[in-house]
Structure formats: C-alpha cells, structure tokens
Image (spheres, one colour):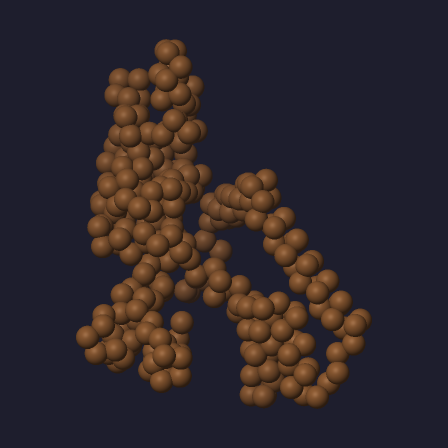
Length: 300
C-alpha cells in the first residue's frame, strides 16, 4: 500500500465509515505503516502492524540463497546448501507458521524441526521435534521398526558445518515479535488479486486518462466484492434497463468464476502448481549457474 493511500484511508475512516482500522497487514519495513503511526488517526488507540506470511517466506528464501551463493556453503556435493534445499527449508518455514498459528512456541519448534531434520545423521539423529506427517524417521519409530540409514534419505541432507552457518538466519527469522505479527495467518494475496482485476480492465502499459482509470477501478472493486451482478446496479443508476438475458449472463459469469476458483484451490491443482513452480525456478537457477554472469557494469 502506498503511503498517501494509507494516510487517506486511516484519516477518513471514522468520519466516512464510523470505524477504526486498528491493524495493518503489510510487508516488512513498511513506509505506509510508519506514515499511519505518525498520523495517529485514533488518539488513545494503537494501530498494530501485521506481517504478510508470504513476505516473510520470501525473506527466508532470500537469506538462504545469499548463503547459497557463498562458495563454502553452496555448490555441488553431499550436504551442500543447494537451491533445492533452500526452497525446501523455505517451505518448511512457511508451513510451520501456517500449521501453528495459535502458538509461537509451536511455530518455533516446527521451524527448528525442519533444520534439525536436514542436519541429522546416523551418529546424531535429531528428529524429536519432527512431525509424524512428514518425517520418515519418526514414522518408523511409531510403527516399531528400525529406521533406515540416513544415507538413504539424502535429498535434503545438510552437513553439520553448513547447518551451523544457517542458525543465525533462523534466529533472526524466529524472533517473537515477527512470529507474533504472523499469528493471523493472512497474506496480501487479495490485494494483488484486486490489482490484476483492475489492470485487466485498464492496462498499465498503455497511457489512459484519469476518468478511465477511475471507471476501471470502480468496476473492478464492485465485481471483486460482489461479482458481475454488481454491474446491474450500475446500469440501473445510468437509467439502462437490464433484460433477462443480461441478468442471466451476469449470473452465469459469476457461477463460472466460482467454479474456476474452486478448481484452482483444490489440493491436487495446488500440488501440481507448486511442483511446476519449483521445477521452473530450479531450472532457471541451474541455467544461471551454467551461464555465469552475462551482464554487469563494465561488460561489453
């Protein structure tokens, strides 16, 4: 959210809507939040900052990839911090937060479990915090079997030396204040989705006038909140009579959008989308390693 937009929304919320916005969901060091705090729109009421889980998820990935770029931690070989392992640890982090929203201690235990699981070996197994839902070692113990050797499960293995280098990153990303701001379990996906709905009606790559932008934003907000049938009310205010065919078309559009949304959010589609995204990112990373630096200052 832009600073000016945040200032306008909080400044007019009481006079226009008789409500107080006591929380703001935003990225890490948000200038918009600082603007609202400085504005002090509700004397005696503190506006709290909530952290976007997706943003924290990206921050964890960025921190791990920075370590990956260091020669001693990244590269090839057993136990190295590869791009695939960075992605796996990053996903452990996000999953631990979403699955333990009610407990900060639960979040911490689950996040540490992901790292310790990767650092475990036959000589020093560290699976006491792992969940039965994904840990092969705990599953074997629960079934009364002797766990396999760790050498048979090296997909996410990290050497102890590499794991120790990650601990400062984990301490930074496991601060109580940060985890507390993510207990709501929310993201800014709705904001991003609304933006795409607006630009679908008014492309940002083409210059248009203010009136068209306002019309596109108004139509997008109406359909985003109430569906295509919201346009029927707009037509009525413009003295345009809607026929049965128009009403049926609007309803069919809403039903189609709902059915597509349900299909996209199904577990099977989510898993496939996630696997394709991971494969695409790994391929891009490997291509970058093979090509090396292709553009930079002073390069012809």
